[in-house]
Structures are given as C-alpha cells and as structure tokens.
Length: 166
Image 1 (tube, rainbow, N blue to C red):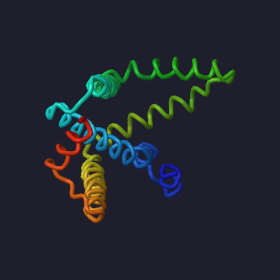
Image 2 (image 1 turned 180 degrees about the vertical axis):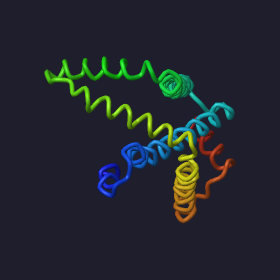
Image 3 (image 1 turned 120 degrees about the horizontal axis):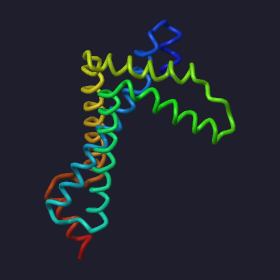
C-alpha cells in the first residue's frame, strides 16, 4: 500500500519501493538482532537448552546467508537479471502462466535503483526510526511488567530461570 500511495503522488518507482519495504525490513531486522542478543545472554548465563543453541546457530546461519546473498546481488548486478529471469520463469511455468519478462525486468531495475538510493544515504532516517520503535516497544513491555508488580532486571530474570529449571 505504501508503494502504491507513493507512486500515485509521483514518487520515482525505486524510491517508492524503498518506502514500501524498507521500514518493514528494518523493524524486523532490529527485532531479529535484539532476539539474537537475548538468546546470546541465555547462552552466557548457561540457561539454554541444546535446542536453543541449535536454534540460535540456525538463525544466525539463515541471517548470514541472506545478508551474503544481498551483498552478492549488489556486487554482481550483471548476473542478477538472468538469475531473476530464470527464477520467475520457473515460477511462471509451475503456475502454468506466461512469464511477464518486461514487468520482471522493470521490477529488478526498481530494486537496484532502490539499493542505489540506500547506498547514497537513504538509510539515515529509517534505521534510527526502527531502533527507536523497537526500543520504545521494549520499554512499553517493561512498564507493563512494572505496572503488574513484576520489575524487569537481570537478577529477577536469572532467578526466574533458576526457578523454572528447578
């Protein structure tokens, strides 16, 4: 919806694409980093199970693989278009549809234009916004616990996990 709204107001497709997916991506990335940090604290406190350790390693592997793929796409732009055309062609074939090559090529071009906008400093506003949003969400949850009579701190967290493990 954000993309359509921005395009109707005359915003360039690459910038409108950024406006549509960047805030969502940054909010989710911030939550993933905070969650991984929480899991790392569990590991340091030795309050983790084998399943948690495996899950943490899997999550880090998936995130690192995704980041590596994105960096590859930026470094090898000339290889991105044929790969994307092959993937969309396969999807179209599986769906028994005809591949819309011009639309797919335009979408890839808009994506690359959006990346160029990010590299030129387009991330300076959304990144602090995502960090602030997550920080205020965490503060809200802490105040909810405090209002319910359960303060949140490392000692109470450690005691709760010890109680749960006993």
